[in-house]
View 1 (cartoon, rainbow, N blue to C red):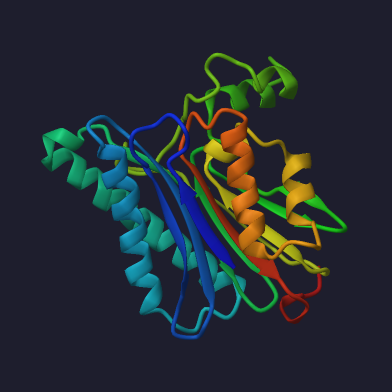
View 2: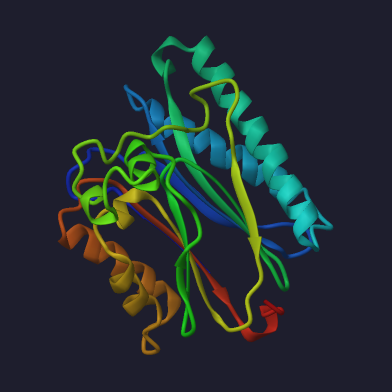
Length: 249
């Protein structure tokens, strides 16, 4: 497993945050947050979100099946939303701040995920490549309703208009799902600083390269995003689905 974040080539500071954390039972939680808001408030939002969830996760145990995993994600992401919303409303310099979130709990035979915003989670294996999340964006709504094609969406001028984020409203809808899988592979969590620059096919090529260890794979993904412009902060978290973690799909 590896977590890596990079400021990119243009931005003066990094508003992304995240990490891979282990609870009392050794179960992994991966998080990527992409903060937004003026006066570096995005940095505050993403950092507070990650710190809160990390603290709660590290004191957690007995998350051994999808139901408690999904309950944990929903409970504490909603709690985080309230925490950020309250903070923004009592600190004028952080008014309007928010953050996207993707979070994944990797159990012995399952992966439970939650997301709000346009950061993404992908599954890559020899058998399947799949984006597991659906962007909460204006442009994705146009795609879903058939108003524009997926190809058009890639270059749409309002591509980065997010419909939902943590902390911007008192209530938030969290998309959640659990998958099982029956072959080894990789789970990639990333901010749009990666997914806007490196397409799925290229990600797959890097992640399934048998000649590189997982740290090199993360470095290579960030290097490519910077090579293609690096206008945004770039963050990746990679979890390995080893044979021992494979369940029936």
